[in-house]
Image 1 (tube, helix red, strand yellow):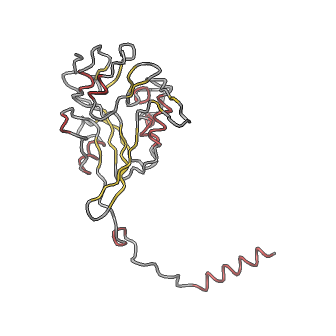
Image 2: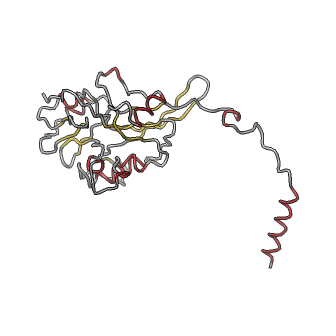
Image 3: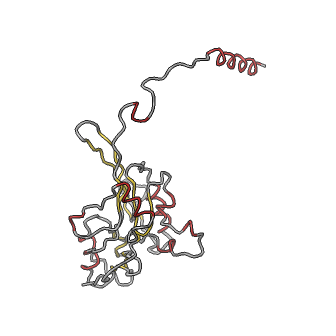
Length: 248
């Protein structure tokens, strides 16, 4: 049985805003690109462009249609390792390949020790473990440790690849063990929640809930109906001028 650290004061993790995520998959693609040459490289692809593609992805985005009885809503739900405080994926590992770092709380896999028994994947309630068929070992999100600790990068770029590439700014990275950090304050302000807390794994990552859907014109500040332009003459004069220019 692999032991967990007694405590992790620093808890690096992600905060994902389900209200602004547009499901573009940029996080998944950039994660794949970076990690194919990063700490857990390579990330195998089998028949990537065929009828039955399969491969290793640390980030996956699911799409759900929700219905509260009045209005339906589409929710894009990114999923990756949650770097739990009490992860059974670590404690079930028979070789010590899966481990949780005391200095920052990140859960990693030692490829030299992994025998590909898949016990960790069975223990993970979030489906965040990926078996690499070519290498015969388990792989998972590393929070891009080769980026966040890379002193050759500008400090602003020392974030996970998924965070750096998100066009909607739906992903945030920081220390969730520090109540004064930006991510902790964001979780408090928006009522961020842990995924499936009933597991007892105490996931570090947090999700920000979607805001209520705006279904009426007034909800967005828009008028109930659009009025025609008041100065139609100026518009007509413009098009007349444009026609003359084009006919020359």
